[in-house]
Length: 490
View 1 (cartoon, rainbow, N blue to C red):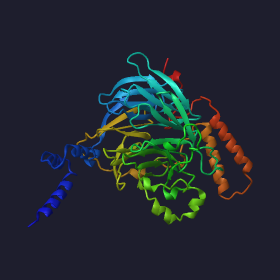
View 2: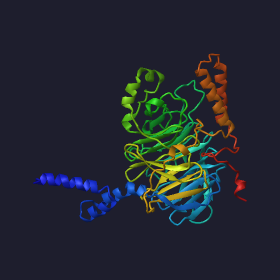
View 3: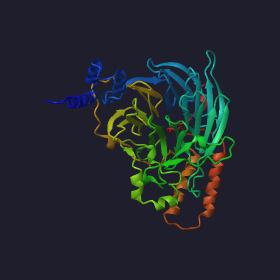
View 4: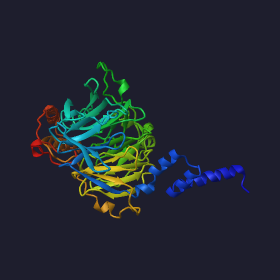
C-alpha cells in the first residue's frame, strides 16, 4: 500500500505527464490541479498547436518586398514596411488596412516599429537611404514624418527600450550605433563598431542587428559583418563624451567560429530569460546564456592563442539549431511561445523553420513563400505568427489545421546551394567589399608580396565609400530591387 507521501509524488507525476496533453490539461484545470494562468501558458506553448499552424490570411497591399513586420504591444495591429517605401498598419484579423502612408524615406524601408504606450500613433523607421525617421499619426489628416538622424550607408535595424514610448536605438552599415529620445528629439552617437584587427580590409563592422535585453534594458547587443556579437552596457556611457564607450562589456561567439573571416551575423534576439539568439549567414543559429560570454578581452588574438580549443569549448557550448539556409539575405531570428519555448527563422528555400529551444529539435517546417522568407514575428500574447520576405504580401499563421503536420522528407534536397557570400552584390559598395575580401584572403593564403600600399588604398576607398552619401537606388535588405517614389505615387 502506498504511503500518503508516495501517493502525493505519484499524483504530481501524473499531473505533470497530463499537462503535456491539451485535453488532459483542460481536465486538470477543471478539477483544480492546474491554475488558469498555468493552463494558458501551457496551452499557448503546446507543440500540438505548433504542428497545426496554417495560413490564416494573406495581407496584400504593398508593391515590393516586405522587409519588416511587427505587432503593437496589444497585438491587434501589425505594422509592415516595404521596398515601395510605404508603412502599412493592418487589422490582421480582418485583413483590413487601417492606414498606409509614405514613410518619407527615399529608399526601401528596412525596419518599422510602433512605439509602446503611444496609442499606436508614434512609429519609427529606418531604411536603405540611411535615414532614421519618426512618423506621428494625427486623429485626422495626413501623416507627418520627420528626419531624426542619418547613417552613412544603409540603416538596418532599430531596437526600442522595453516599455518606453520615447527611447530607442539604431544601427547601420557605417558601424554606428545611435541613441534616440523622442521627448527632446535628441540623438547621441554612442560609438562606431570597428574590427578587432585594425589591419582588416573593413574599416568598420557593418551592423545588421541590434537587440535589447528585456530583463535588463541597460544591456544591448549588436552584430554584423564579422563573427562576434558585442554586448554593451549603456550605464558605462558618459553622455558628455568623456569615455571610450566602444569597448564591449562582453563578446559571444561559438568557439569554432572565432577568427573566421568568412561568416557574419544577420539576426539577434533576446529571450525573456536573457538568453541571446544569434543567426549566422551560411552557418547555423546559436543560443547563448549570459555565462557563455568570452569576456571583454577574450577575443584578442593573444587571448585566443593562449586558450586551447578544449578550454574554449568547455567554457562556451551554445545550443545549435540546424536545417534552414541563410546565405542569400539579411534574415532575422526570433523566439516564440509565452516563455520563449521555440526558435523560429525564415530560410532561403521559402520555408519557416521552428525548433524546440531546449535541445534544438526541429519540429516544424512550413511552406511559406516561393522565394526567401526573412521575417518571422510572434504575436505578443496569442498563438499567432506573421511572416514576410521577397514576396509583396504578409502571411498570418494560426493553429487551425485539423491534422498535425509532419516534417517533410526533402528538407536537405531542396535547400539552395550556398553562394558563400553574406550579401548579394547589389551596389558598387558591395562589389568593392567583395574585392577587398578576396584580396585579403589571397594575401593570407601565402602570397607575400608587399601589399601595404594597396591595403592602405583599400581602407581609404572604404572610408570614402562610407562617407559618400549619394542617394542613388540601392538594393533591398532582402535582395529586392529599389524603385523611386515616382514609381508608386503620382
